Each structure stands twice: as structure tokens, then as C-alpha cells.
Image (cartoon, rainbow, N blue to C red):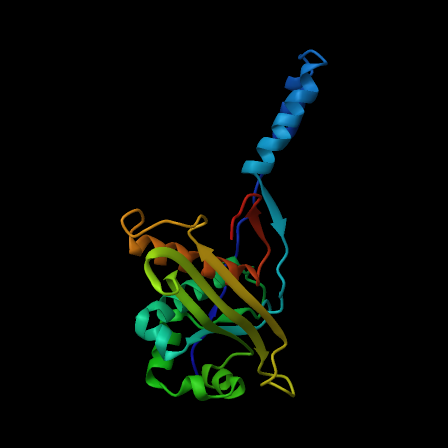
Length: 232
């Protein structure tokens, strides 16, 4: 059985009374100026602030879990090493952001990849068997169904897309091979069309595209702050 690791605990966050100080400063201004300033501050906050977003699935807490990422051979051939990178980063991101409540544990990505490497038939296994092999109660299974960097038929213009499905299986349930949670995730990069190879390096495109997919897939499992002007 794969050895599990408990998730780390988070420290408390202390926030100062910034809003109260701002209000006090406004008291000394002429009345006609205050509404304009408030409007400007509101717009500035909208552009630079964040919004708290709740997790869509929160039942990894209190359970042991593992994250696996799969894709067809065409994607793996075009992007060697991509699945390992996604597995490591999504596992680490989710584990880091889950509060270390009693019973919460996960399979570290290095041990997970070692198990999968030594069992190359794992994509053909039903989730229940893979979950039992990994010794977990919840299995997060991500299928990457599309990953491209350029426009179809035009290798010179960047038009990156990463898309896949994220499913959670309860290995302890009476129907462990039926997902108890499913979401589709799709991200794109660049944000504007028409960029060509000599304007953005290929490494920057694939790095940002995979970063965005990792972020969106991971955000499903913990409360987080999203920028108000997020573009993906």
C-alpha cells in the first residue's frame, strides 16, 4: 500500500483596519469630491481586487486521496512529460491548500508517479482497483482530452487550448466506479489572437497554458481568491 502524507496546516491571517483608516482620511475632503473618489476607488478595486470563491467539491478533507492525470497517446507524444508535470503540480497545489484536518492524507506525487510507472496498465484499470492499489478513499481522475498550442492547421499562430474532465470517485462506496463529482475544465492562452512564434516563445506558451489548467483544476477542491479581471 502506498504510504500517505497528512496535509499541512495553515497559519492564521491577520488583516489590519485599512478600511477604517481610509474612511477617516475621506472625512477631510469636500463633499463633491468624495463620491468621485469613492467611484474611482471602487473601479480600482474591481480591476485589481479579488473575489472569494468556494470550492465546488470539499469532501477530500477528512479522507485520503490521490490525483492521477491521463491523456491519449497523441497528446503524450506531442507533449512528453506533460502528464507528469500536471500530476505533480495539481497534487501539490491541492494538498497545500487543504486544511490539515484529522484524517486528511494524500499520496505524494513522487510516490504516486513511481507506482504508476511500475504499473503501466493503470489507465485500463477501473477507478476502484486503482484506488485500492494506491490505498486511498478518494481518487481524483483527470482526463486531458485536448492540449494544443497553435491554430488547427496553422503551426505559426499561437492559439493554445487545454481541456479535460475532472472526476472524483469514492473508493469506499458501494459503487466505487461511478463518479460522485464531475466537472469539465478548459483554459486558453494567449488571451488575444494573432500572436506568432517570433513574438512569444513556445516555452512561454506551454508553461502558461499548463499553469492555467493546473489552477482551474485545483480550484475545484478548495476555497480561494480569484482576481476580478481573470481572463481564463
